[in-house]
Image 1: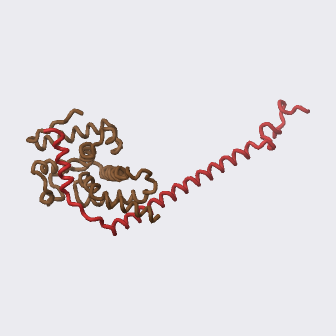
Image 2 (image 1 turned 45 degrees about the horizontal axis):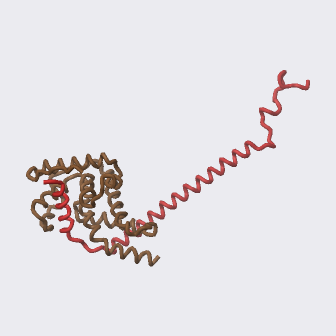
Image 3 (image 1 turned 45 degrees about the vertical axis):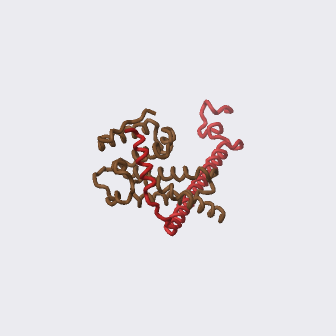
Length: 167
Length: 90
């Protein structure tokens, strides 16, 4: 039991940073990201003995985060997108190129499912099939979410002239 | 500009965000809560399984007692009111 806890603590110490970054992209908010990651890691800790391939633990935590988010957005129903973001002091905290920051601000305004689709497809480099599995939806839904996300970003930032790549 | 721009923006933001330290106290509390929840759900599952086994056992016992060979079925056995068709011996 102590060995198990030690093994999990090592994993958590090593992976907290990268997993927090993914959680931040998924939620778009620092506090929500920490909350989401802690919850996912707590679930992983309880089931740690059952995870045979510890190298896949990262994917397990990421999936737990996505599932937790899916539950939240199903409970909330349709979100009302507003122009004002709750975390208004955000821009000053990130040392990012101005055009990338503008793009990130628009990505944060997307509904969580669309944002999650973009993160899984373009940051985690998952295929459409793998993204569909993670989100618990069809491949068609992933394609449509990506298409609509890019359409919205293009409408919000016409000067960036986003073009969807044909994969 | 292509979706590469989205990829680059997300990657840059990902690396620019400050990582907070792990709140060990809060994390331990969450693990304890998760363990309790996990144990409770396992207990509910075990209870449901035991109830299903008991119910299945009760049904099979009832079925066996109904079809026991030594017992005579009321249809096959004596007729409560002797009539012409079933009273064969006078």
